[in-house]
Structures are given as C-alpha cells and as structure tokens.
Amino acid sequence: MDDKRRQHIEPASKRPHERPLGAVEMMYSAAEIGARVGALAADIADAMGPDIMVVAVLKGGFVFTADLLRALHHHGVHPRIDFMTLSSYGTGTESSGEVVITRDITDDVRGAKILLIDDILESGRTLAFARALLQERGAEMVRLCVLLDKPEKRKTDLNADYVGFSIGDAFVVGYGLDYAHYYRELPFIGTISTD
Ligand code: IMP
Ligand code: MG
Image (tube, rainbow, N blue to C red; front, top):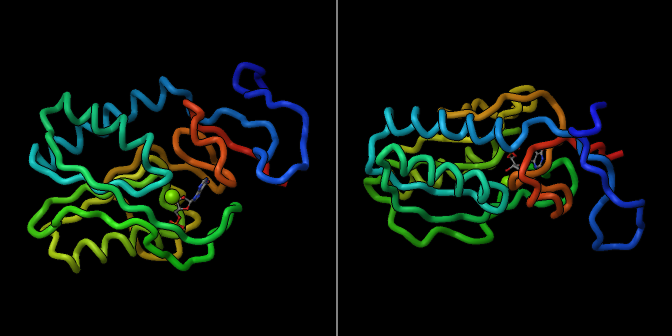
C-alpha cells in the first residue's frame, strides 16, 4: 500500500475505553470529499430551492452536514437546521436493526421541505425510521442525502436522493463515521480492518 494513504497508529493496547487499533487505509481524501460535497450542494440547491429544513442524523452525520450546509450557502440555500440522535444499538461493525431516538428534533416540521442527512446508508433501517417519523409529523417532503451508500447491504427498499459516494461492503471510518466511538475526527474517509 502507498504509505501516504495509510494513517500510522501507535502500538496495540488492550485497555478498555481506548481507541481500537489498526491501520486506516485512505479511501477518499479530504480534497476528494470537498469536491463531491460541492457538487452535491449544487444538485440539491437546483432541485429543492432555497427554503428547506435540514434534519441531520447524529452522531455520524455531523461533519458531512457542517460542510454540506456551508456549500449550500454558496448556492443561496438558507435552511433551518435541527438534529436527531438515532441509535441502532451496538458499538461494533454490525447494527442490531432496532432504531431508537436518543435525542429528538425540537423544531416543527409541518409543511417543511426536509433534507434528511446521514453519514451512511447501509440496511436503510435508520433512515427509513427517520423519514417515516418526519412524514407522520406532517413534513411536506422528505429527501434523503447520505455521504456514503452501501447498496449491497440494503435490507429495505429505501434509496437516497443524493449520494456522495457509493461503496462496497467495507467498514469505513473518519469524516464523522466511527468505529466503537473513535475515528470520527479524521478529515478523510478510510477503511479499517476490524479483525
Ligand atoms: P443502516 O440503518 O443499516 O442503514 O445503518 C446506518 C448507520 O450504521 C449509519 O448511520 C452508521 O452510524 C452505521 N454504519 C453503517 N456502516 C458503517 C461503517 O462502515 N462505518 C461506520 N458506521 C457505519
Ligand atoms: Mg449513524
């Protein structure tokens, strides 16, 4: 592997609550992500117009959402923004399938054109749950935007309207995405071996 695309991490440790260790291999650099986020913002602004509400799914969606919002600003979009923390129980690389709200939005969504943003679409259960909830509460429209899509892992018939990158069945970290609560701060997206 090209050494510049590998993040070197200190020697292995077995103590609890420490970052799980392994080598992270870069998949998309910060520059590649930035370019893609700019293009997505242009598409979203064209299709949805300036007057939208953004609902970002935490925790994983926070970095992508922050960058996408600023890119949307350059296209004249001035959204309201709210956050919802959803959890599908589990700290490893497989989720359980049961989605729970650990922090709800506080804004009124009735009549809103919503852009629902998450880090990654895998089984589709998280976003299917969130979209249904917003629709039940009276949103006029809910469009889905994800940084990453893993179509091979889908367990629902859900698809995103806006996708940053479509990837295979790798476990990825960085740019908001975690492995066991770590690695969210990496400015790039990389794969991690979890064996
Ligand atoms: P879904 O409900 O199966 O679509 O799962 C989506 C959620 O699982 C995402 O919001 C992430 O929190 C998590 N997830 C799925 N794949 C990955 C991954 O490769 N890295 C980190 N988190 C992931
Ligand atoms: Mg998530």
